[in-house]
Image (tube, rainbow, N blue to C red; front, side, top):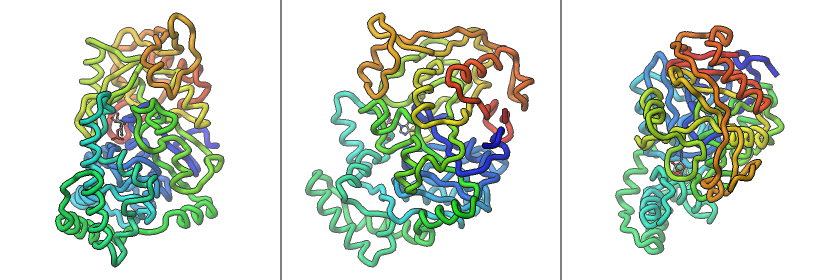
Length: 424
Ligand code: IMP
């Protein structure tokens, strides 16, 4: 295993170890300069990966964040819910910036997000008493249909029967869910997408297996965060796919033991958007300050994210389950100027210490976190490029995270632009 991520060797994965929005896009963009394959493995257009580089600022939802490495093959795995409206918009964004995506391959077995999935997502959310706060992108319904073994796949775009299939499915959806969908307009809309994406449809697994045989540098890009996992997360306040290492297997039939490095990424603090418990939530002035300085507004939905102190109880759980070999801490610069910092290290429930209360949203909403207090720093750290040069208290903050999780921090970001990073 290389000591620093700068000269990484794959296969390697970047996975969120929180509730998403950890800055995976910028880390993958950074690491992908030496990748030969970048492979998205979960989520759908609920994902918002922001990449800011010398070509501009991009919001990617389906397109892998490694697309800016023009030599890398970019894969979209079969367990990604493919939203063609979003993907074609991203393609236009890239066209405008002269970024080629000719090495993109979308797995033919992936499910397509259809207009009825978005409609059903909206209707269901409206009817819920306890809201989940979904992104409204049709994620729940598309994965529900996949489990029910209905709904079009990417490969249907290449089929002669595509129009017939859509027409038949629209009839069923209208009847079953009492929708008022017009098959003609859906066929027309998808005809446009079909032309744009047809040449990018293929089988991703043989490409990946060949790359493994040739010991190529493969980077797996996760979406969301481990605690939004459909099974391991705080159900029902979760998404419908697997952001952890399991998701890699589901998309690519690759056992996690093949991974040389598994990087867990989180911000230097925690945020959550949508509903669901967050034990270390911060209120008041510091919360607003983090929102303002960290620009904590969702890339996909424009919603404000709620900030919390970094919750090491959750991070430790994600670390152990996913066998992390490295941590990446982003947005450390956002904490500059906050005089007293806290790290959540344990929970108490009704006054009794509680080791870990994952999966159970109800219990997680009742626990009281216990913290260690650390002094903050006032210096602007956005121009620092080596760990040693960080203020003493910033170093102590990072070292405390390492000590608690027993995983080395190998990457720190200190600003939004490419290059504003520290490889430790
Ligand atoms: P869905 O994935 O749109 O169904 O949303 C389910 C829950 O996951 C909601 O609380 C969303 O806010 C949250 N969620 C989904 N995708 C993301 C993401 O990329 N970042 C942060 N939260 C997300």
